[in-house]
Structures are given as structure tokens and as C-alpha cells.
Length: 212
Image (cartoon, rainbow, N blue to C red; front, top):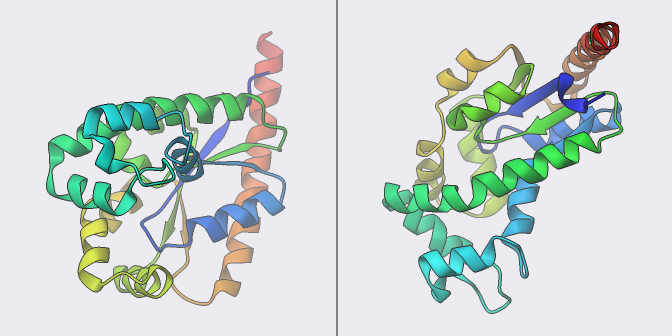
């Protein structure tokens, strides 16, 4: 049976705590497929997307190691919607194919696709059974990313402006995890959702088997 009969889409804005949440789901037995990690591997030295990126944008968008020059690319795509679309045309099909292949090979109790731009992409909604959004106030996002990445307030706000709004992510969610306060509050929320997803996954597997 394909592992894609039941899959969760996990999303949230930068600094919301998606990775922390994904790690806790993985610890409970879910197979987590992180599209950010896939994107980084595609644009790392020797990454399969790098020849196309260099051909499209020029050699100056690769650093000395052969990886994508992230700061330069970030500056370009935040100021040029056309460049953003060209980069997405290179990366998104490769990310999708790698993520779906990983899902087919997954061995966990169910699959979670961790997709930062799930709401923005549109197509990911068609590939998941439920969407869970990790939520926190935008002021918390801002403070976390400035402390974690050493970026200025203006740089973080520019990243946030290129993502779906908090309201859009909440509107798209079937389930919401509140990560705006103490991190210890996460575990009970994640355990509750894990139990729900296990139950739904088992029902999905039973229904599929009965149809075979």
C-alpha cells in the first residue's frame, strides 16, 4: 500500500518552531519528510539543482564550494518576483519528486511532509489528507529568528512578507499547534494529534485493503 493514502502537511511561518514539532512527531513514530532539508541538499555543493541555477542566474549565484549563494539569491528573489518564479520553477519539481519518493519508502506509522510554503504552493494541499499549522504571534517569530540567525529586524520582516500571513495559515489548517509560549506545552498537543493521526491512518489502511 502506498504511504500516500494518508499524509499530513506540517507548516508554519519562519521561527514558529516547525522543526521542534517535526522532531517530536518523529520521536513518536511518524516518518517526517522535510522539504527544507531536501531544498538544501539540492543547492549544496554538488546538488542536482545547481547546474540549472547557475545556467539560469549566472556563476555568481554559486559560492566557492559550488553551493548556492543564499544571501545573494535571497536578496534577488525578495526584490524580483520574476526571479523568484524562475528559482521556484527549478526547485519545486525537484523537491516534490524527492519528497514523494521518500514518502513511498517511509516506514513510520504515517507520513508528515514538513513544508514551510505549503499554503503558498497550493499543490501540496492536494497531496495531504490534513494540514497542521504551528502557530505563534508574529512578534515571537521575529524575536526568535533575529536571535537564532543573527538577522536584522528588516531582514526577518522581509522573509515574513514573502510567506503566507498568520491568518492564511490558520485558515488553511485542520489542526493547530500553539507554540507561542513554553516549549513544554508542545508535548501534550503533539501526543493528542499523534493519537488522532494514528487512528485515521489505521482506518485509511483498512478501507484501502477492503477495496483491493
